[in-house]
Image: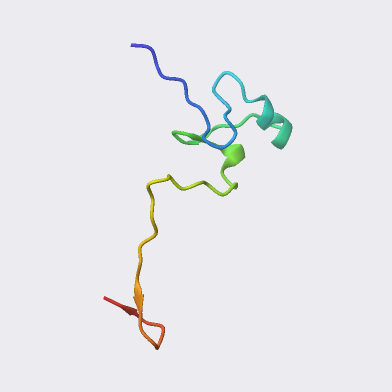
Length: 66
């Protein structure tokens, strides 16, 4: 079974081509997550479309209510 190619979710680089990362950082990138390279780790990661922040109730004294 052939191994699936990895692709960075931010810049789109792959194992075969990280030329844009070399231009950006001056050195080749490496994988820090399954779909995130080291050159993009500091860039704010987009959240998946289905993700919603947890809503918390806050009382008048600015304390979280369970």
